[in-house]
Structures are given as C-alpha cells and as structure tokens.
Length: 139
Image (cartoon, rainbow, N blue to C red; front, side, top):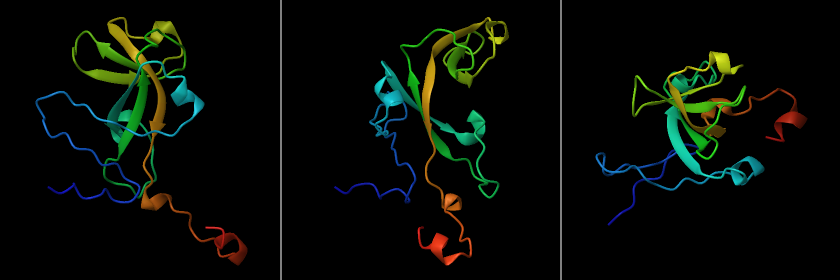
C-alpha cells in the first residue's frame, strides 16, 4: 500500500474515492478567532472563477479555494457572504452578499455564513525582486 503523491507545494490535495458516497474529509485551517467562533463549521471547495475571487492575470486555470461556512448562522445579515439554496435549484448552493434584505432572493433558504476563504499559495504570488539588495535579502 502506498500513499497518494504529495500535492504541489502550496496547493491542496484531496481525494473523493467514492464519488457516489458522502464526500467527507478533514481540512486543516489556521487557528484564528473567526475560525474558533464558527459554531457549526463545514468546508466547501470552490473554484475562484465561480466564487468571483480575482487572482493575478497570469493565472489562467481555475484555482480551488477552501470556503469555511458556519451553518449555525442561517439568518440574513447585510454585507455578509451567505450560502443559499434556491427553491428553483434544490440541492445546489450559491454564495452571495446583499446590501439590504430587499435585494435578497425571496426563494432562497440561507444555509450559513462564509467565515473564511483560503487561497492556496501560487507561484505568481511570489514577491518580485525590487533591484535593491537590502529589500531582496528579506525574501
């Protein structure tokens, strides 16, 4: 028996060995107050293009992001990212933020609030050399 090969440095690795079964697993997230205060956490994996997260222009392929959701917060809040299920698309979720309750879709059921979005380290995020020796030695 051998392990799966390690993920590329700074990337996520996950395996859904039973595509028809429940998709369960463990995710490590940084210890911070927003994570600690999440009462009923669940993690979603979403592509940055579907979530509307802008990354540097040189990134052409979709990047998987980790989205931490608190299912205990299933109420409306202004200017918070909400995970919703729309009546017209049962079983499918979407994420959105609204300035007022009037903008919120009347057919939506709130499944939780997004508390953290984690972006993997990507080579294009590496600090570029400035040309100043003192500055470049720090990185």
